[in-house]
Length: 403
Image (cartoon, rainbow, N blue to C red; front, side, top):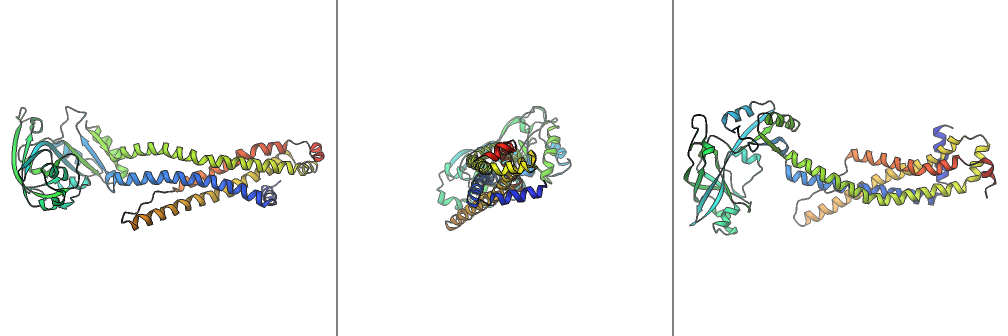
């Protein structure tokens, strides 16, 4: 029997009992839709978190340090080697030292970061008040934690911009060590600087100063550096080259991989929850096919008596299962997708009405749609196997005598 003929007969047979078939298809639709809806939630939340963590250029930036090496120094020569690597767009170093800041008659210990404007931009740091300092100027940026510790009220943070602060920085021996200066001594420097900007971070107190400020005082070795590659696709290759120099690297891509691992498990759990509805739908499909077989036992016997082969009968009943799963799977994908889009619309409407940024927490990747449609076919095939085999093995004489 031709495949086209099988599906035509199966389609007509199914919709001879419209209500039963529609209820069965509806069950599959709800089951597949539940999986699509819940897994789309997993993808959407993952994308939202990754976007918040990485930003636009974070996946092009590699953080370089000498944590795992006591031999390699992150000095100017090393920076030049990093800059010369293929596919590297920029290299910006950072100096980190302990220090103390005095402002308004109070003082507090701080971490002093000496860097360039470009390093601050790569770090995604923005000033809530004022601006980032220009290179070579006697200015600094403080965070909210510094102002809080020196007794400035939060309402007055913006008024500190342009005011003078006294900064004491300790430069250790290792930061000054070189072949020409093998045994330097630690020293302390004191600078009067004006506040150029305030960062909203209210955790650990720290300040940013122009890198030239400490380089003039003999700092030759840097604490770490940021390497920006030309394209995201270049990141892993450049990381390997940097690590071959004996340096340690980290990147936002490491965090993304960890998030992906966590959310892969999360999506599996969500899919398992949605599969409960699909299991119920599969049982309904199994019941529909079994009842259909009982109702058509004599018909099957007559078909066999007229020359139908076992595989024809098997294929006929399996075709019915595949039609149910195909229609139900397709409608389920559409149902789950629009349910997620509807939820996004409602959440965005509520967010905008309350003055918050709109976000999409449901996302349905195209490859997932293909996987779920294929999955619905597999469910239909497995569910239809037993009734189809049972129908194909009926004895024609027994089937014709069946009441």
